[in-house]
Length: 112
Image (tube, rainbow, N blue to C red; front, side):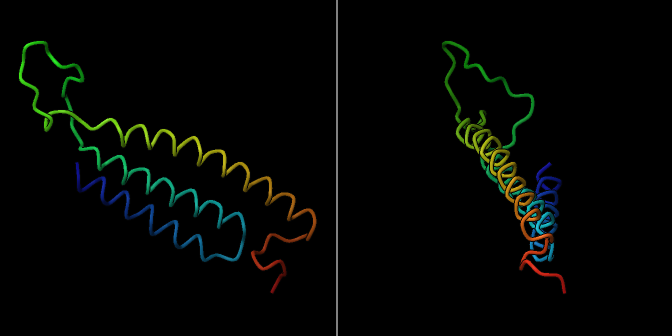
């Protein structure tokens, strides 16, 4: 499971960096989104990957913290997803306004 997750994070980071160096603004925005997804997966994986573990503590049983996932990274990732969606929408609106004003979608504002 950890290998699959680390491969997914690596693919997202490499794809995001490759799109960031492209000359079109839409590709840069998608690259930023892929990088944010990779960071969210990385933060989520820091909360320990546990499967088939009960989330409720039994009364009278000694609590082993290693048996439970940490809820703080999950809350951070949920917040980051909402903020990332809002900033991507804002970037797309700015992209459309910039393309309407300049007539091109190049990052530097002019065609080669």
